[in-house]
Length: 492
Image 1 (cartoon, rainbow, N blue to C red):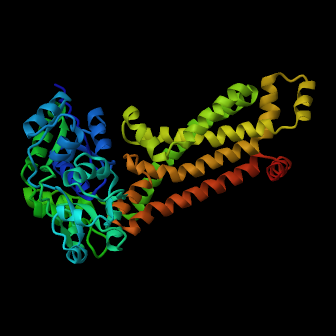
Image 2 (tube, rainbow, N blue to C red; image 1 turned 90 degrees about the vertical axis):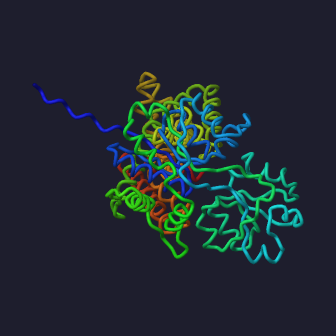
Image 3 (cartoon, rainbow, N blue to C red; image 1 turned 120 degrees about the vertical axis):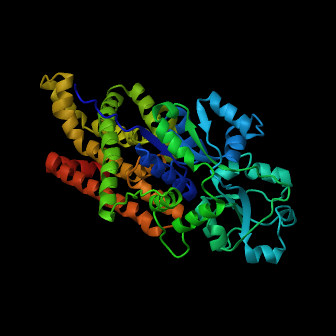
């Protein structure tokens, strides 16, 4: 009797938002799931609430940590849900479920430097009404949410207008430098104690309950029932003090903090008596891994762009009316802010490398199409007529005469596209695509300059390497005469 093959480990993808607490919670869930035998992928710091929520609905992630107030007031704001039962019912309609609270709340609040608040006699949010000249700095999500600035301003009839939109971590820098007077804070944020902030009393009870929970796809119970049971042991397992302590360990005031994966494993080992081991990589291993990811992003998108843009450039040359449309369309694509293009690709291509590659591909089209068109248009008429006199058919003229003569311009377009893409690909770190963007966004989130440089320096080196490679390639492929002619043409 043949021995029955062992069942493969269930796979589970966890998501987290772009702030430290969410990443730590994601790592805690990952550690517990691994102990139950799951193969886990943690898509860290995917973006704001909408990005992670859409990834959950589309199946890009199976589970992520969120807060009841965010789910009820932000994501289901048009339903006026008042209880967790109503929230669960709406989630079930979407094929989703919600855990019981993890044991702590992380509510929004408004914070000021203690000295500034004392100087102005401000203790409650209502007191802000007496100081219309105060400057506020809020993160972009808070500025848009109904449980954020718009609702807060209306509920308290605050006179301040036009708060500055800032990344949450950068708002603390602006606050301590005196550029702004108040920021939104999270009640478990380590910065409250580290900066000695005064948290203003929400004297009208504007902010709802923000109990931390896990939101997950219902099919997870069928695909990985044992793993899900293990994960749900986290219900009620994390106190507010423990969460604040873990946030502080990740973002200590004196410099680099512990990696979130290490903090998470230490927590679950102590809490559940496990012997989990955090997976950490050396600096060289991290850079090598991200280099491979970054090369994949840039390489695949560049190949797709070359295969598409060069023929489009040829068509634009041969058919001027169509060419105007092509150049207009690729020009319009270039005007879309790159981060927006990355996020717009998520609903269609989900999270990860695919939407990043598609966005980079679209961004690469303009320089290659335009340079192919310019290179072909710039060929002297006498040369074209000579080729026709020789009796060469159109395809042969293109292959043997026109494309070789346009090669310097086409190569310059490809080089420009790739060098730009090396920098733009760092935005892939915002949607779980990996690459050099991951440490840059993590460093920004933790205000860790060395972590940001861990992504920025290799990205700059890669861009220089590609530029040098194409300079060498041009010398090998293009004859000195054509290079000189192309150079003279550019100068003229």
